[in-house]
Length: 596
Image (tube, rainbow, N blue to C red; front, side, top):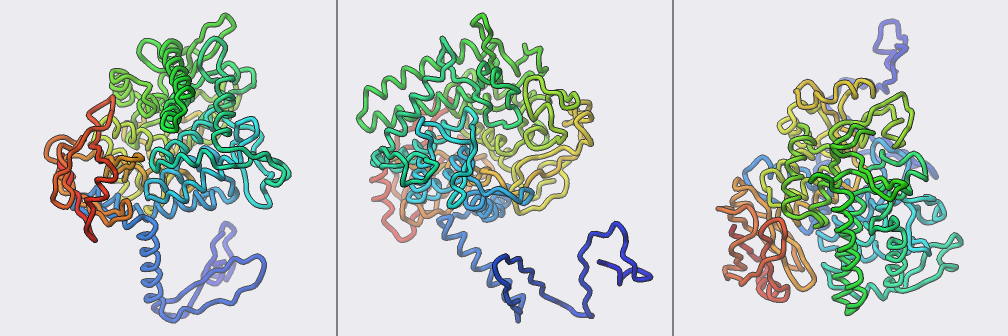
């Protein structure tokens, strides 16, 4: 307490501080130990400054090894900010991967099935950690239920039997997409023959085992067997990625349809059909492609009304499907939902015209100073009474998903901009997700810790009632945007993946190398280093015209003949055969020039 510092030596009643008083000195070192099983001996650091510098050097070396010596060099504030945050986000990504809880969430340590299939997979696969990705996938599929589904989350070791009893409708698709991304990148079709157990309450020794392809077949049958009668649309299934919009009853969950989950189904099936084709299973591949066409037809028939995708559909007793979170929605008052507008592009289910139209809707109705928001306004709060959705209508806290600015989905918005070739908007969206020099990007942003990931941007409303009354002021300059939960999210891994695969544009697709940077003209001269395909490579970007789709590639001074990747929303990236590309990386340190 601070009693000795106060007159009379009495402790202030509201004082919760831990106070240390020393003699007059110019430096001191404090070590705090928290140990459960044994008592440790304090270590006295003889030269604190030297020790600090040494610890920083060790941490930097560790990051360089982990990140394949990833570095960015350009005298531009955006590149400097991205470069500054990369090692910190790398640490955050590892925290989420290894001990999944954040600074505001002291319990946890369970693997969220959808979470680990995103951030950790994106992080590892873009850093070339293919062995680790394979191991993670085997762990995920070894926790699959015998019926083909998964729990929302599950724990390890002696806590193995502690797992969720339910899962949202989107969980399975993330597992498929993660598996497909690994196979597409590595060409490792043999993983489908890996003999893996299903979850069993008595442990692996009692579990049924089948090849991974059988795991997938059970999953595909489970999904197609769940389609809403008369359609190829999957039901909401108790929720989707937005955890605040869980339906209030099982009956409602059975009738609701998430447009976003339907898009995830379309993406997962489309991508796995390509894997089956590579594996020689042409019949099953054709069957999946036919299902995808039915999904796309029903999506446009039932979930896109007057050119706008709805957040949700609702199967009525007469066989029709009404829509929610749409300009025609009279029940919720919500007119626009960000998730299906982003995923419409990322899944490829949108036409180019639909993609352009929905990007304009986002700009007009879903953007705040701090980024893209989940809906155009929050659901009305009526004292916690639930009519359609659970947490969004009952939570007294206006933050995270309920506060509508969730950085994870903002990153998916950034990704959709990259797919569409919107270079300036893409980089600005990346900057909005960083705490570095935050107030230079978001003028009304509050002071925040500048070296960690924030799960959300929360408005400092006093109550849900005030949020309902004043939400329309978010663009007025009168609102303060505060940082939400720190560290815990798959967002840091997604961010690093976007820097490598979309901004630098360096991707591997089995037998091909794809160079598809999306860069503003201001990034002309950007130099990026990365240990790539086992070689030290420096990528130099000459941005002199187009902000995407390179017109020429030179490897160690030699021009490479290129083809172009298919992209239905713009000209695609440059494609080079993998073996040819590796053969041209013949030096100890290689130079790849990308002319745009």
